[in-house]
Image 1 (cartoon, rainbow, N blue to C red):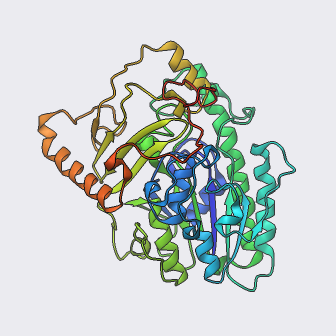
Image 2: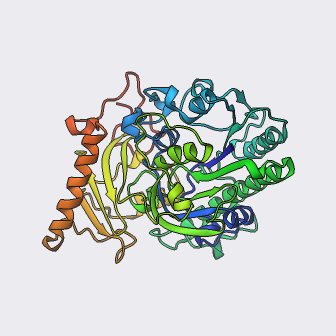
Length: 433
């Protein structure tokens, strides 16, 4: 069974199959051929930790990726990466486009690198990499193959807004205000997701043209929420909620959606089961095949997510079930760590135009059924004391089970890691610790 892993930067669920008013016809086509997971979550809402967790089947603190690769963080054991695992099991492994799990993609187990470095604009480079991926798919293969196709889009900076995406008719993402600045910023996102959709179309057409659709699993997902304030980098659903579609031959969930609570660390054991491979020891996720086959409605009672380092240190953990979420903040700084929000017009407007509250509660508890935007903190409401106690106990058990270093104090950082001070306003500030 071949595997094609299509991944984007910073897309969250802001695509048409999840009900958003952004036309993505190729993703809609993929959704019609896939099982779509409405309640899928990443293990960490920043780039390298999320991707490393998905591709090792381990929480970020367990696989060692507690920060960004380009800032000096690394996997504890790159042999645990999915590409290395599949290579050991007889797969041809190829990477087209980006990865964010190692300084050198060859360390991860990719035998063929297809990056179109001649295209200087990273947003436009996705087209060239999609064509490279398509050519790889169409080759004659003597062995099953694993192809990772990683796109820069929808990462910032966005390309200039296309004339068809007129800010006057675009609604900014909740909870941002409906202002001219935010509408213009979101128009750039709409233009960026256009590129993603066209690239997905190129890859899907190659699958059909090659005749390998009947023996190929396609996984489409992203690393975390969109790069707007209060989203990427946070443990709110706007930060950890991700699109996830799985297309495979004979899928009884084809064209259907599920509300099963799933984590991206569940993908590694799922892929093993679909491919008929014995999973490696120590995986922390659960196979989603019982959901895909209709044998079960749920495989997880809880999902967990974390932040450690992005541009700056901001240690948090969360536990979520179908109704409630508990977030615990382990840091000492009050207020937002602005360096952990990507720079944007939306962010600038908030910093310059708001009287920002500085209190940072240690605990946040939300009833996601009655408060989906996660605005009413119930952690200090005595009526919810039992729920707080139950979730905090489950969170601590998970941290102990996964040897979370945060239980013993601040999460260690690698020597030489480049980190902003938590007081910095921008990740590009030369204000390093």
